[in-house]
Length: 260
Image 1 (cartoon, rainbow, N blue to C red):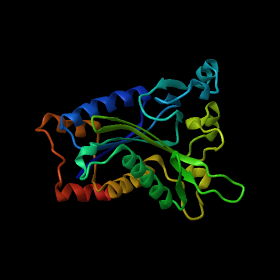
Image 2: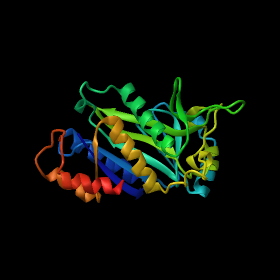
Image 3: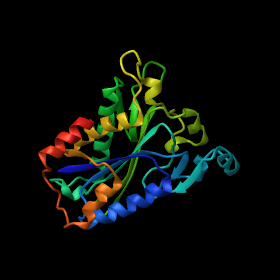
């Protein structure tokens, strides 16, 4: 199967939400294949289906002064923060295109695996924590594990949206505005805070996105096709419906691999 990859740079949350809805509908109609949107948002708080407004610690006035928007979301999970220096991924995936079909829990575990592998690419050892979705650093002595990546998904008739957020160079002070994911006894961290810069330079957003995309393709068994633009992907929607294409031209794959 092919995974269409779009690196969109910085995009407002409302624009990204509208785009996801459009792509989900096109995927339902089988007019596009599976896709992965990678981007970053301006500062924004999002409230998941299971969120409590009490976990937003900042007043509305403070959020306005800081230029932080707040939005309700139909994804799972509690409140989370998105902002500059954070790699956000929105997979638009048909779980019915896998054999056997992927369930919701297996899908989330696979997203965690992608992010664990991506962190390992930069020499950072991470893990899952029982009953706590996301990716965490490994506890050491009196230092508890810290959350480096959050996950919150929505699934509609087998099609996924929303996804994950990996802290790269995020200003961790912005997480003081909330109780991240409703978890008050653990802190958050970033790749910048954990990486050994003697061995690995801190990756830029696009470079980290390419790393995550490679691991996403490997974990989900997809060939990654780097799309030049949104228009490039949407051009497919005007053609015949696609039924989970198994191959793409070798020349295109060679071009995509050079970008990785």
